[in-house]
Image 1 (cartoon, rainbow, N blue to C red):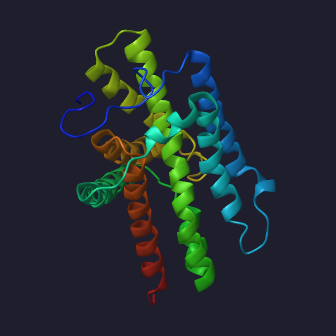
Image 2: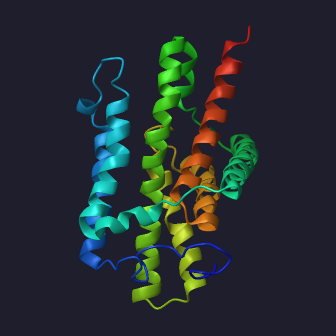
Length: 247
């Protein structure tokens, strides 16, 4: 992990006062935005029954944390995003492929030792019409941006606390923040996977650690979001293909 200006990568934002410094209360506002966004994602009243209804919670999920961050960081919120370069696209694909391979291997090992629950979206998409499937895949883009914010904002807050307040060395702070920020991501998937805590921590947590590498290597939220989108499109696309085969 290198500071700003080395190897052509920007430094992580906010934790060291660049582009703006955030105080403890300001970080609380930003993280409260993340919590509010997740509540809006799962609240029944944000899911209208219209064909476009899937867009409402997904757009709230990604926009509310950015609004909260903008309230405390001003125009500095844009430091999460950078222009994509060719190597960023390669990193997206590489992390997505790596995550697919590792997730499948971990999943096979886990299901060999413990009972695992399936994502109900696999079945619902398999039974959906073509228009619903297209909409669902399109909606994954803003929703997965929201999932990246749910991980990366806590990562940056932890980095600020561990390095700036606890005085850990930067490399140690980055590694610990990387590990800890995967936990809330794993836990919010508990309802999806039948409250199987071990499955969420092992399989979802491992996938999250790998996806976060896209941000650690690029310092660009577009890259980790792109890797996440490619990963989920591949997973759900394969599940739909298998489900459509004659039995």
